Amino acid sequence: MIVDGASLHKAKDLAIPENIRLVPLPPYAPELNPQEHVWDELREKEFPNRVFNHMDAVIAQLNAGLPRFANDHDRVRSLTAWPWIVSLNLNAH
Image 1 (cartoon, rainbow, N blue to C red):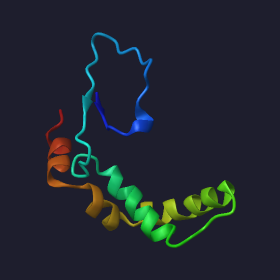
Image 2: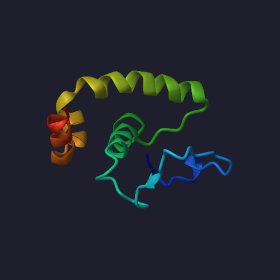
Image 3: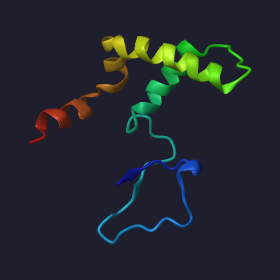
Image 4: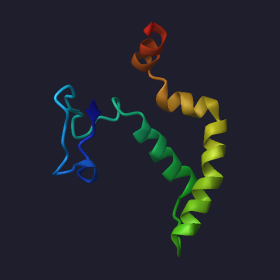
């Protein structure tokens, strides 16, 4: 299983089954983790220079921005459809 190295994603008491091996991503590897580009784009376009008074406002902004982003197929493709990812999908059996 591929895991990123974020400190928030580490559990000290995690029991890993014998048939699972954790393979960590390098500390900074956006080319291996395209979702990082998606979140960067959302932060840049939907939350620029914004201060929210309450988490409900953040959630409302995210609920408004995610559909706009998801419907812009060219933008999503430009951030996530890297040749190595596309080739994996095309070569899957």
